[in-house]
Length: 211
Image (tube, rainbow, N blue to C red; front, side, top):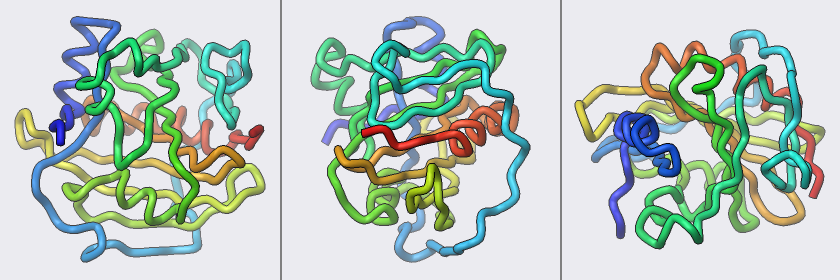
C-alpha cells in the first residue's frame, strides 16, 4: 500500500507546488475500534462563518452530489485524480474514499483545506473509521442530521509523520444516492484548525444532498 502523506508535509508541498495536494495521516496509534465513543448530541462548536458562495453545483468549480456554503475568499477546485497519477492519487485517497473537491483556505489567510471525498454506499460510522485510519487516536463519533439526512461526525487526533506533532482532525459523512460523501477539515496545525473551524461548521450547517 502506498504510504499516506502527512498533513503537515502536505501543507509544505502545497505551498511549493500548487498543483499537488496531500492528506493527513499518522503512524501507529490506538485502534479506532478500541477507543471510539459515540453520542447522539452534537458537541458545541464555534459559530459558523458567513456564507459567501456555494459549492457543489455543476458551475461551481466542484460538481458533487452535495452542495454547501463556503466562507469568503475560500477557493474551490475539483480534484483531477487521473491527472495526478496513480501514486499521488492513492495517497490522496482515505479509507477507500476518493477526493473530488478541495476548498483552499490560503486566499482567506489560513493554511489548509476543506476536502470532499466520495465512496461506496455503506455504514457511515464504519466509513469514517476507515477514513480516519489505524493511526486515529481517541476517535469520537456523533450522530447528526445534516441537510435533513442522517449523518455521523468523527473527531480524533493523529500524529504527524514529519515531526511527531499531535494534531486535531474532524470530518463528517452523509449518504447520497451516489454513495457516501465525507467532508473533512485538513489544517496545517491546531492553531489553523481552530481558525478554520467556522468554515467547516458553515459547510456542515448548510449542506444539502442534491444527488
